[in-house]
Image (cartoon, rainbow, N blue to C red; front, top):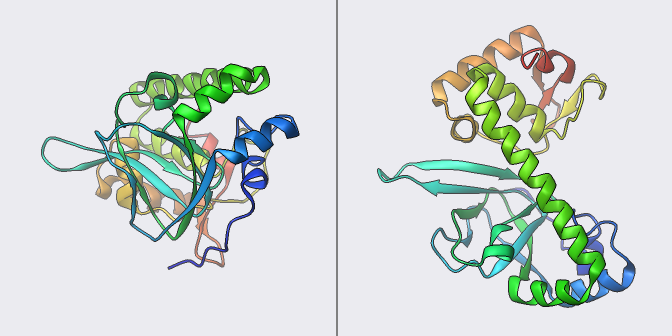
Amino acid sequence: MPHVQAPAAADDALRDVAPFAELPDATIARLAEITSLRHYRKDMYIFGEGEPAEMLCFVHKGAAKVFKTTSDGQEQTLHLLQPNELFAVTGFVTGGLYPGTAQTLEDSWIGCIRNQSLRALSQSDVALAWSMLTFFARRLTGTSQQVLDLGTRDTAGRLAAALLQLAGVRDRSMGKHVKVGLQVTHRELAQLIGASRETVTRLLGEFRQEGSIGVASDGHLEITPELLQRRLD
């Protein structure tokens, strides 16, 4: 199990998370007052599908995933989450129930902000309200692109796009080799892109042979953005 150091103070943790990174110090201080950093061991549940959506969360240290359970009991991965990623965001706007289950992939520290408190603060802080609005607009654009990818790209293209996203690659001009910080299984990748584990294993083998991916000295997956981008062209 990876060792995860104790968390930073809440205000420092918030500074690394969109949409909070550029907020004024006074707003960050008020946010820190309603933010709790909670420790979760590997495979622990943060919240469950169908529970009241009471919190907005972010990964401070570690990694997590959000998944749905199908009618036949199978897991369908919706998101793979790395440090500083915000999740469970729809409850902030709509309330209701969590649409999926969140579970840690390794020993993790998770930031939690109660939606009721965050809504109240947003109503009195214009900078926070505008930052949240901008974040949701960007998130909606990203979600639309993911839906488009599922409908228009073949399986190899979807896998390449997922690896680029997990590595935080925005364009092919990034370094020759970029590490994927999250250690993800073939099964989790398959669930993420809507393919079988066997297909993902075969495609990763092809990517490795062509030099698009490799394994870093610490065991993490390493990608070559320029070669993977060709799968998207």
